[in-house]
Length: 413
Image (cartoon, rainbow, N blue to C red; front, side, top):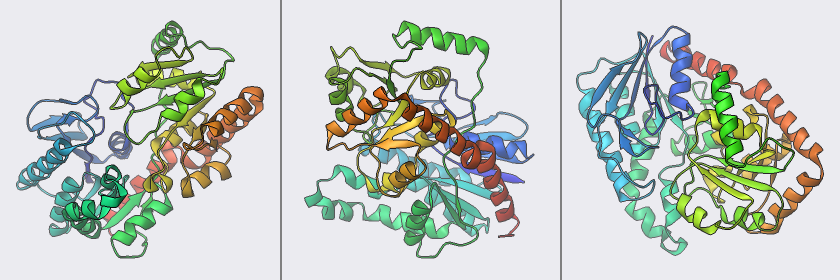
C-alpha cells in the first residue's frame, strides 16, 4: 500500500541532530517493515533547531520505500506567538498548492495540530474518497487560551473562533481519530459530534528501545562524568525534554535549595535562560542544555527518577505525553504534577508519585521519602518497565496501529 503521513514539527529520518524519533519516524519505520510505501509530508522548517532544512519546497527520496516531501514556510523564533501562527497558515496554503498534482494514497495518517495543514489534508482526502486517521496529541486551539487572563477568555475565544471552526471541520472530515488515551479520544469525538466507532483507536505515544554502539555509550558516560553527573547512589531527579511553557520549574528550583538530592535539567527551549539565571549558585542544580539521544539514555540510567513538572492544564490531565512512556521504557519512576485521569493512571499503576506546584513542601517531602528508602525507587522502576513491556512496547502499539491503517484502507473496520 501507499500510505501518507502528515506530521510537522517532528524529527525526520533526514535530520542529523540526534533527536529522539517521534510519531512520524516511528510509524513510518513500522509501516516500511511491513513492506508499505510511505510518504511523509512535513515542514521544511525544523521546529526544534529553528532553522530551515533546505529553505524551499523539497522532496527527498530517502529509500526505496520512503519519500519525504517538505512544505515551505517562513519559520519562527518562539514556540508561542503570532509568528508561529503565520507560519502554520503558510504551511496550510502551500500544502494545498502541492496537493494539486498529487495522486492520492490508499490511506493517510494526519498529525494534529497544526490545525491548518490537518484541515487542508483531511478536506482533500475526503474529496478524493481516501480514508484518513487523524492523530490528535494536543487540544488546539483551546491550548492557545492558556496565555489569556481568565477575565478575557471570552474575548480570546471570539478572536480564535475561526480556529475552532477549522478544528470541528477537521475532526468531522477524518474517517477515524486516534488519541493517546481514552479520555483524550472522548474529547476529540465530542468535538466531532459522534460516538466512538470501530475505526477509532487509542495510540499511546510510546517509542522503541533505542540501541547505541559501545562507542556512543562510552562517550555519553564520559561526558556525564565530566559534567559532574557521576554513576553513584546519589538521589538524582532529572528532566529531559524541551523547556517550554507547559512546565513549571519554580517548585523544582525551590526544592533543590532544601534538598541534598541532585537535580539535572537536560534540554533547551524558551525557559532555558530564565531557569539558568534563577539557579546560579545552586550547586545541586545542573543544567545541561540540549543533549543527544545517547546522552539522554545514559542520564536516564543514572537517575533515580524522572520528573514531568507540568502546569495544571486540562489537556495534560487527560493525556499521557511521551515523557511517561519514555520513563516506562527506561524503567524509571516518574515524579509529576499531572492530575485527572492521567494522574490517576500513574498512581494506580504505581509507576510514579505526584506532587503539587502550589505546595513546594509536597515535592520536598517526596524527595525526602525516596532518599531515605531506595526500595520505593526500585519498586517504581520495576513496575514502570514491566508495564511498558506488557502493554506499551513499540512493537505492540505500532503493530496495532499499522494493522488498523491496513484495515482502514481496505474498509474492513
